[in-house]
Image (tube, rainbow, N blue to C red):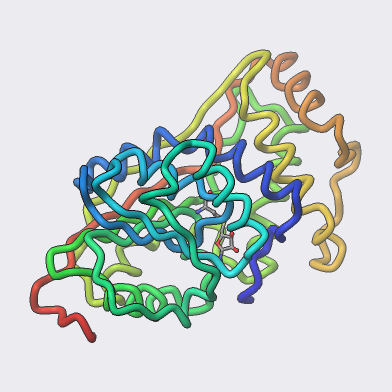
Length: 279
Ligand SMILES: C[S@@+](CC[C@H](N)C(=O)[O-])C[C@H]1O[C@@H](n2cnc3c(N)ncnc32)[C@H](O)[C@@H]1O
């Protein structure tokens, strides 16, 4: 499957921005541990509406440069508007392209991406393609996810667990690995990169007002149109509509549960000098 599972609707653009507000501290920590720094040139693969490119722009500053790539020009137009609003359009730009057909004569200091490699039919081939545009010693850093966390609510809250189960199940049935984050070392090695450094973080939440309820609800609403074609039945008692976030919150609050979200993995390494620019 090469199409982006979650689609390109306005709702998906809004969901990506809400998700990005939750994920930004984790991505930023992975980028800083990887040594992404002031003045660097960065290639962001699979930019969506631009949140990772905007984060990279903050880190590299106006003496750096960020080029974001995505095949969806509507998302990139949105990303471009945000870059103008945030005053960094002189050092951030976007290009509409399928990742595997991107070509350039430029060499970058870093290749970055979040939640994108899992969607590639051959992620190692895609990453090998991109390491051609990386200077020797340049940084590769990816943030990916594992949706298959065995403990979801503590104490257990059946309603929330049933809703959360839908997410990895959709990915599994669409042949997109829901636990892709755990295979980042393999991705790096298959791409002729060294063993990566790793870090993992788990967003957790509880009580009224936790942003996790809306994040989960909007993700499930986005995948809902795919459920029947993938042969997944909506669990009894679950209605996937605009009331889902408040029902998740009410159930968690009533059960006094802590909610464990997906595991966030960061992996980073430097391109060995021996890996030629053309390899
Ligand atoms: C889950 S979104 C992540 C967006 C962004 N990295 C973020 O974290 O906010 C994945 C994005 O990758 C893009 N994408 C996935 N596979 C692609 C490919 N082969 N070529 C170009 N864009 C791709 C999709 O269009 C989508 O915008």
